[in-house]
Each structure stands twice: as structure tokens, then as C-alpha cells.
Length: 130
Image (cartoon, rainbow, N blue to C red; front, top):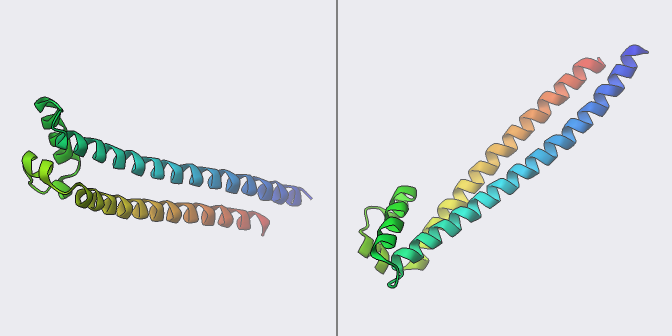
């Protein structure tokens, strides 16, 4: 009888753990989406500052340097003047493509980790009910 009670407790506990894992997974997915959106906005703000003819030279240089530091693959050795004259839509599309790729990779990793955690919990549960 003690083993049966323990098995029922483990079943309940594993369901609670599954609920916690689901909540944690969803929170992580939300963080990834927020991070992607924040990066998109940051890129857009920096690019707009470089292109803004009414912004001070200091602000434009700072924004350009930040763009180079954060997004070297997109800026690819462009001078500040080249960035200022570049097609914003093209640069933003390239940035969005890069963000989308990174987001997919992060979500796949998260899904794999969640699946592994769930499998470990199931293994532990099956050990106790045998």
C-alpha cells in the first residue's frame, strides 16, 4: 500500500512538474520574442539616428559605432556616410532575417531542452511505479 501511495504522489508531483515546465517554457518563449522585438527596435533607432540630418554629429557617431559593434555582419565595413545613405528597408530586412534565424534557433534549443526534461521526469516516474 505504501508503494501505491508513493506512486500516486509521484504521478501528482510529475503532473505539477509538467505544469511548471510548461509555464517555464512559455515564459522563455515570451522572453525570446521580447528580446527579438527589443533588438529590432534598437537597430531601427540606431539606424534612424545615423540617418537623421538634424541629430548632432556626436549622436550620429555614437549610433554608428553602436551599430558596428552590435551588428557587424550587417554593416560590413560600411562608413557612417554609407550607412546614412543606404536603403533603410534593405538594412532592416537583413537585420530582421538575422533576428528571425536566431529566434528559430533559440526556440529549437528551448524545445529540445524541454523535451529532454520531460523525458527525464517520465523515466523517474516509471522507475518508481515498477
